[in-house]
Amino acid sequence: MKIRIVDIAKKADVSVGTVDRYIHKRGKVSKKATEKIQQAVKELGYEPDILARNLALKKEFKIVCLLPDPNETKYWERPDSGVDKAISELSSFKVTIEKVFFTPRLESFNKACQKAIEAQADGIVYVPMFLDASLHFAEQLHQKNIASIQINIHLPEAQPLAFIGQNPFAAGEVAASLCDMARHENDAILITYISKKEQEYAHHHARIDGFTQYFDKSSSAKPEIHHLSLKIDEDESQHELLLTQFLEQQPQVKIIYVPNSRAYRIASILDKNQTNKIIVGFDTLNENIAYMQQGIIDFLIGQQSMSQGYNAVMLMFNALFRKEDPASTNYMPIDILNKFNMDFYEGVLK
Image (cartoon, rainbow, N blue to C red; front, top):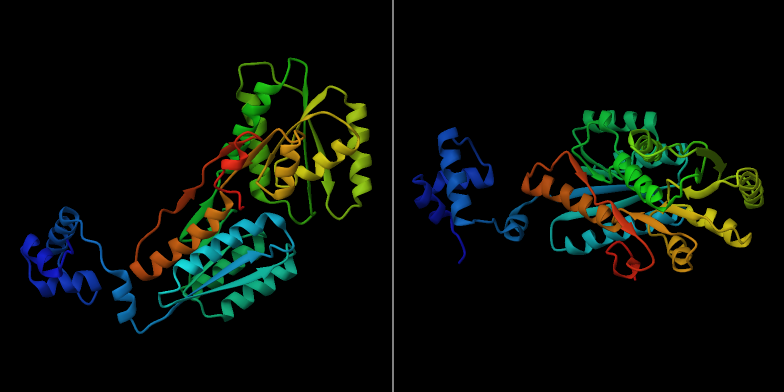
């Protein structure tokens, strides 16, 4: 049964006008009346008709999504698809959702931030990829009273309305527990990943910290842990040379932990050289999935990246239109994936 304003007023023992002012935020309502209306709304199970309310509004909201270019960085294909899903679902409402892409370089990020500011948005969903630039961007948003939601990388100093992403430290601990179960007594572990020099993201370091601190706190004997840094702008043959030489010099390394989405690059080198190691990495890129299905990558940590893009837009829409206050931190699940359950995973696009 549709709940009417008059039903709420009768239940709360207040006037219809008071309920109307409360629901549509058209004037002051006393604290006592507010409490009575809130209780009546809860008991009656009232939900406002947001479509009708939206059609009555003259204002059109604008949301800008500031994301890494999915053509440049494969990980962002799925969050971008999540944004597209939100755009489709909100097409009946008076909201414009624009996407602004940047390549993972500081100059491109700064230009995209400026473009987002100039778009005169009511809310911005963004990835704070570069610390200092992101803090400057956040300061501009606060000055212009533009709400913001961070996705994937959490920069709490920027004081966003909300954050959606994985807890990277806990994800590192989960990865360490998998390695711990897989290793034998004298096995060593190698931590390595391929990135740009300017892409030393805080969440990657947190994944490493969570991983190493797991073993610091473990009651079992701590394994020897090595680190090997590879840069994406180096030639792939150089990566192969560095990794194969390292593994030859450290034959006790049986497990490789890759704390970002490029586990497939390490897997391709091991596959080419017919080297058998246990590999634990992150994210459901098609390349990672392919090597998992071949049995070269053993585990991937998933974070439902498509849902991150979708939920960020929906949270911003609800904050702007429904005046809802989202939780400041919204952690995504830490999903353990292998070749046997990969086909059923929500985060994989078919």
